[in-house]
Amino acid sequence: MLTQPFADAIAHAERVVAEAPHIRGEQDLIEGYDYLAGGIRASIQMAWAYDRDFPYFVRSTGPYTKMGLDNPDTLYFHAWLRDDAEYVVTGRRGSTTDLSFQILDGSYSPVNVPGSLAAFDDREIDIAADGSFELRFGPGLTGRNAFPLGPGSAMLVVREVFSDWASEEPGTLRIHRADRLGAAPAPLTTEILTRRYAVAGKMLVGRIRTFLAFAERFYLKLPVNTLTPPRLTPGGLATQYSSVGHYELADDQAMVVTVPVAGVPYQGLQLGTMWYVSLDYSNHQTSLTVPQAKIDPDGMIRYVISERDPGVANWIERTGHDRGYVQLRWQRLSRALTEADGPRADVVAVDDLPKQLPYHEPIDQATWRERIAARQTATAARMLA
Image (cartoon, rainbow, N blue to C red; front, side, top):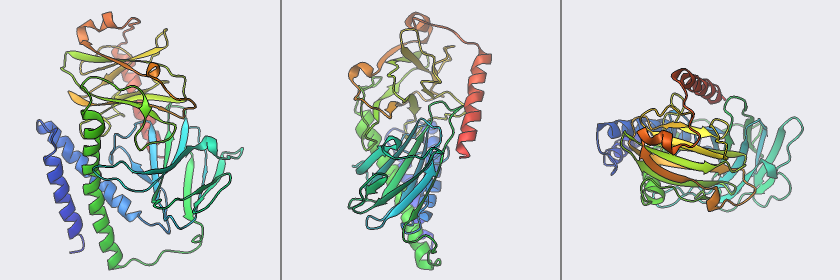
């Protein structure tokens, strides 16, 4: 049967999910099966877009295809490449805070992050007055807006990062292989479809195993309820730093994360589930950028991670998750970050929060609903892009 390899992979992935070491109860398992569904959708999409001769940009992750602690502030796109061909990327720069490009070698595995062969943002390219640009990628290419594809180059990843969800607009992107424009791919065959179903199955099992192992390696070995100093993101962009940790809190506890406003183009905090994906960021405030957050007079942002509503603007809802991941990101940097730029984490009783927040300003439920409504509206508009 044509689809049998993919059906077998789904059954294998389901066993991996059911046997995940962090599962403690039914809710963990339910979320795991939902995560599996997102992986199935994403793997089919990626396998059918797996054309290196007639590539196009596809959405790598979204609200229903989450993976890799996806950033709620980012639109992710990717296209597959050959390392011996030349590609042209054209587009229009939107008003987002950051637009970045990364060439990966495609070596995701349960023990490795992908090899980053090149990474840069739009400060390194020429953009016309109307926002349009053209980039070329290929073996041996040099010069402005031209980037070499080294041996093993397999994927071009593009990230658009929003800092102010309400005001920033995405741009446009397209890609084609330079010597194939005007041509067409070969007709579908049974052999091609068989290969695609097999590839989708390998992607599905691989992504689930990889990111469970990734979280174990980079997060769970850290002391609980602590955050690391800022550090270059593993496998990430050359101008991105992150601070990571994992929390475990009772319902009457809160983690107060205090971090200075670093004065960089993008800075944000988010929570993730034990499946290493973002929490619901549309209907709940599970993340905040600097423009979205309340900044205290001393230049600090004080996030309050808790289950109970503390009645403050910077409440980060854990939505019933007593365990999970915390990540802060700084992007589009022009300087190295130090420990002084990083966060401090304190676990306190929710009832004691007014004493722990030196500039405590309670907000009412009407104001909170306005904040959530703004998130829902902005997310809906962004996801149409």
